Length: 486
Image (spheres, rainbow, N blue to C red):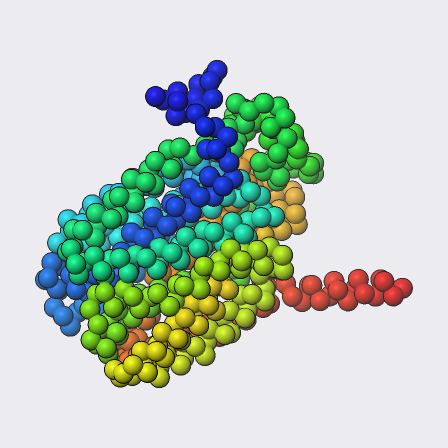
């Protein structure tokens, strides 16, 4: 059985070509992301109705505890991401950490299922955040290993689509199933999806692992174009890098041992203003979206009298535009992320502010709310996928600018996506707290105004640094124009 699954020295694993193909790896990572977000969002429409019945929370404190439970997930994600990224860039296999993350997700789901106290619910959300850190750091780095930087935007589009589908389906199914079949039926869906995820992660074979069973002609496709030829045979053996990986790579300058040890990769990455701008944009985009998790279910309950089903359905307009994620990723690969993200943030601002117009229960008000949420989903969809791809672009640019600074035989993509994870987690931490507590203290109108101003402000770093400094680009264009005239 193990030989059939993992192979042996003389026998390749069953269905090796399919299990190590681009489409299977991208699909497995997308399902992993879907599972993580699905389990996160499944309880969003359920929490306001179960905190009082199962945990004994007073109705007046429900808003605060909903915000805290959502923010705890972001805090755990924030804390675990740098370690997960560091570890992933120092292991020869991406699959093993992915399996460990799945165990953490299963444990968190058990806690949320049986939990009847705030302490158990908080612990469940912590393990959920740790699982998410593994999925995002290791999974996205695995995508870069598989498809390279030239097609990473389109792949991130598929990942973004799977994430958005989970955001759409999880609250919807959570609300409907809770209303029709009860609390435990909600988590039965989660365990079924985790089972599917286990099968896919066990079946996945990384290209750098699959290559030892492939014939020489099949080895001509590069796996990582950025691994230098100067890696010695001893290093390749110690690091688990097959000889074939270097067969089609290009040469890079020699790096002295002193240069390699000069700075940790994560410090070098944080010196990139381009990467910092991408991380800031990811943080704000996550904060804007997750702020709705804490306020929208309660708002429609208090304003329209909707139950958990309506609290789940109201997320539908926000998520529907995400089906264009692969197209947005293709545009980012072709034209760069600068103007996509800038337009997204600027256009989202008035839509967020105009949500304050929804104030009473009528058919027209419901239509206004759904229309504005759809526009917000469209505009913020222009932000996330390009910025996810921008992380890869920024790392590549940093490596080209400083070839004397080694990121190690496996590169620094997992650490870069660890930083992305921290930014996204920061948004997941700030968003529910910002939305929940501003709404509690100042009301719906003040909340939407604050979110709109935040979105507009965030367009500034995007227009200046996304895709590289706009000032440097203009100077280069002027110099090139002058050289052509001369």
